[in-house]
Length: 130
Image (cartoon, rainbow, N blue to C red; front, top):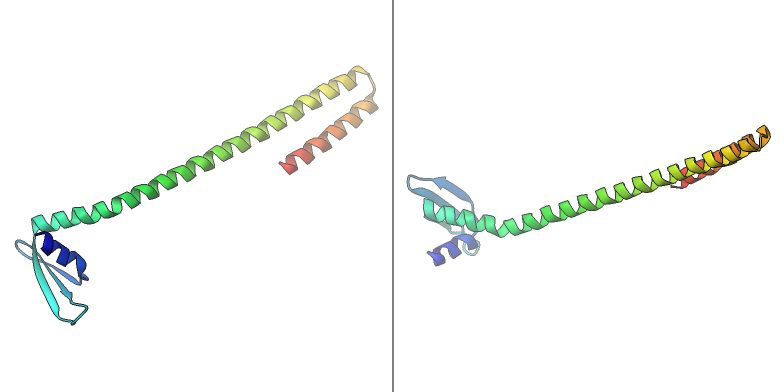
């Protein structure tokens, strides 16, 4: 049976005809061009299908594993970027509040306006660069 399956797997499959007890496989010999036909019972056909699937299951598993790794890396990078942007924005808001409060304590409206303008420009530049 092993030799028979080796012969069948080594040829190019052309036609698969279902029969009462299994299938009839027909192909053309690449050397002489002669037609060949072999009857497969259901047991041998199911073993052949299992062998075929087992050859490609490891490649499929590797492909799925690579996709999962890429997705995890992309998610981690996006989360890190979002956290960094949020931290920078929060720091800028704290700086604005502290500077405005200290300027307001000096009771000079001109100083408050100047500080607010400078801080807004700095925040815009930082956000654009991020």
